[in-house]
Image (cartoon, rainbow, N blue to C red):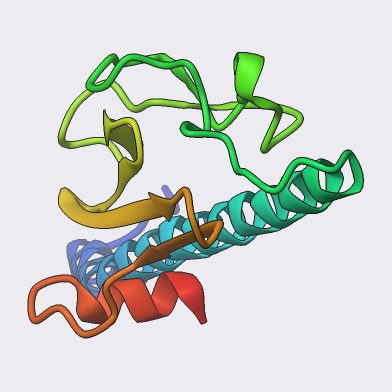
Length: 153
């Protein structure tokens, strides 16, 4: 006699797999976005720490001014190295590379002092202040405030 699964047993397995995938897939999508936010949070903290270190180094040299730019990258250039300073001093020892498309998660440079971090296609603008030496986003913004708070707190 052959030993095999009956049709009912196979249907039950398919139904159970369907139920498990319906529960698990949405949870994994949330975990991925959490990872993007965590990565952005770490990068923002590194950039802010790098600016503070650069500011301290310049003060020790007797220079009270901050660099006019955080890098030599041209705005809106995919793959450009960001936050590596070039002639302005290194904010980060290893650059972060600008993202390729608006669908990617990551950084873009919009001008000499403004950058955007994208989370699932939503941009969060960050501004570098050459007078105060800060790198922040607008936490009170109606459109990006919540994501800004996630990245800076």
